[in-house]
Amino acid sequence: MIFKLHIETTLQKLLEQEDTNGDKKISIEDKGPKTFDLYSETHEAYAIKGTYYLSNLLQELAIAKNGGNEYANIPLSKIEEPPVHRISRMIKTYYWNELTRFMDESGIKNLIQDTKNASLTAKNLPIYVPFDDAMAYKYYKNLETKYPIETKRLPKNITPNYVKSLNKAPGILSLKLKYHHDQIQGVPFVVPGGRFNEMYGWDSYFESIGLICDNKVDLAKAMADNFQYEIEHYGKILNANRSYYLTRTQPPFYTSLIREVFNVTQDIEWLKSHLETAIKEYETVWMTEGKRLTYNGLNRYLAEGIGITPEAEEGHYDAILKPFADQLKCTIEEYIYKYQNNELENPFLDTYFLHDRTVRESGHDTSYRIEGCCADLNLVELNVLLYKYESDFADLINDLFGGELNLNSNTYTGNFWSKKAKNRKSLINRYCWNEEKGLYVDYNHVTKEQSKFISATTFTPLWCGIASKSQAKSLVERALPLLKEKGGVAGSTKDSRGEINESRPHRQWDYPNGWAPHQMMIWKGLLNYDYNHEAQELIYRWLYMITRNAVDYNGTIPEKYDVVEATLKVYSEYGNVGTDFEYVPKGGFGWMNASFQYGISLLKKSYLNNLNDLVDPELIF
Image (cartoon, rainbow, N blue to C red; front, side):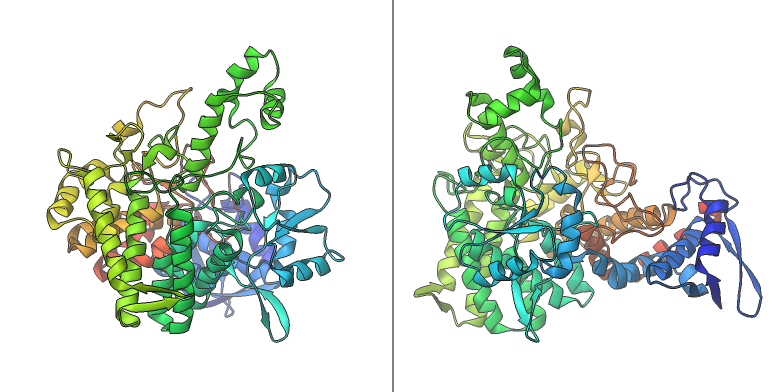
């Protein structure tokens, strides 16, 4: 059955009847009759019943309207589409496209309108181009006649002081451009959510997992190519391509990304090029002594910026700054000006902001696990990721290059990298394994003590095979009961997070919230050790939560969830990206989309059928 509907008339009538709270969505919080009559082309009446089906109708009307149509031909099969099928289809055919961006003329319009530019004092948006990228400089210079942008060339040597000087004129950093049919185009990338217009570090890896699940390997490959551009031109994979991130990297997933792309494309020359760049990143970003490499042979995050982070929301640091401003009998704004311009010294704040920026580099911004001490910690997950680099280098060189690879006048052997991986594994187990608790924890290389904070990251050694069988068994038996909740694995235990009050607010990476990257790594880790039942249970819990909330809340796929209550209603800093939209979700959220597609690729068919039964109208009226 197909309904030919006049879009504006039907939308108005549907919203007047069913959208009782006026947010231009249809959810379980609306108090309408939850039934709406449609008429087929043969004038046959059909009643659309229930929150889920009505919200699907609303979404299909909006999609048709966004396509510039006056009328919509909507089949009943899309209105009454089983939820797992619909969520997956929307991600594959609609959301990924909504989240795809380009750093070329087609993307400039979004950048100019970006709300993050509201603090700009300059009339034109600065676009910063690497010192040695002549093509990009010429390209953006030519666009200045059409758009309010200003192209600026970065210096050859980018220092923390220089990056701080850009705080008064923050801008976007160019990414890779290429020629296509004699036209310059930006190499595409996927952003975390609809309000973002820049490429983020570790988000990109997890998004790529979903893209590969959806047979969009070219887009995943493009993300890797932009990673390569960032390393070659900015010296690291950036937190994101904005000027204030030039001193800050992100969790290292580069080798995992190129391996998974190569598994599909089998492009050996492409892989060899990226291996050279990945080894360069490993050596220059992570293995420089006194920076991100610590005395014990393990690694830490260390954002190398200076002063207050410019991207923080106004008032974010007021509680920290107010006592110092009061001592000088000045306003917080006056104190910030003096501190940022080196008119006063404050060693406490210097240390505080060192750790604060480093928290943001870690990707876990923010969490009481690492607040105030992040640069002092050998985080277990970081060292797991670098073990993965070393073992990936070893595997690829042994399997594809006969055990020896010549790159840029250097010869690397698989045996060399195998020894490095073996040594790191030993160090992780020496410093981060707590035999008494049977858990992996972070190690403070300053106090020389293990952290007592229990986090979802305790499972990451399973993801790449570091844990022994007995350690894996201990994690399943001892950590899983502490962290498993109704909707999946929480970011931390409640006890580790500690008391929450007015002076100690929620942190978004802690209990009760759960995040897609943790779940995806945990699923793979459990499957690596044949804990199939436990993996299936966790996947089901997570997908049940996503599906239930999408059914109840107009298809919403947000940034994160409260996994204790299994709800998208998250009460912590920054809110919940992806919940603020009208009619139809604007792309969902990147790694949440990916977790759904990855999860359904792993979950047993019988469990998927159970999720499709969540549309029973009796449950959603």
